[in-house]
Length: 152
Image (tube, rainbow, N blue to C red; front, side, top):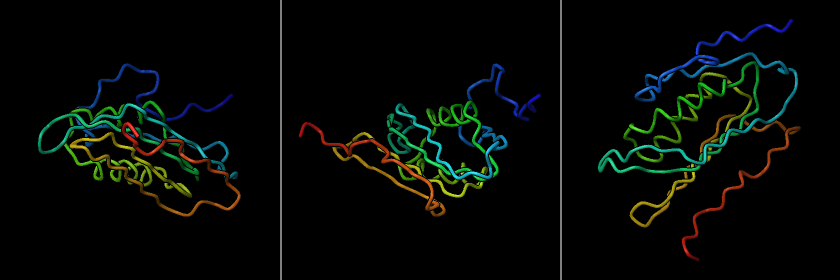
């Protein structure tokens, strides 16, 4: 019989955290820790607030990682990302903070995050962060998000 992961949120009704600091990001054991492979999370409707105007900002996030001993538990990741809805931070801060928090939690072989932010004030901002080196035996596709082209 398979061992149940030791997580607190999966399978339970959990309130949305009010901010990223209150969100509990969880991990589970990687059943294939002896194998290099890539996993991808895509959040096409990520929302945060501008720290100055408090207007909403929207992004398409793509998180790729090559796990080591741990995987990101997906429900806790959804709650963590949703906790940014009322959080004021610049695009760069949100993108890098998410990447660092995940990498610090699961200590992957490799992690990259692409934050493709929709324009505010006429300027789209795309933010990219990575930790580690992609193992040579892992195929990692393009993140598949076109840069903003406006009407062109």
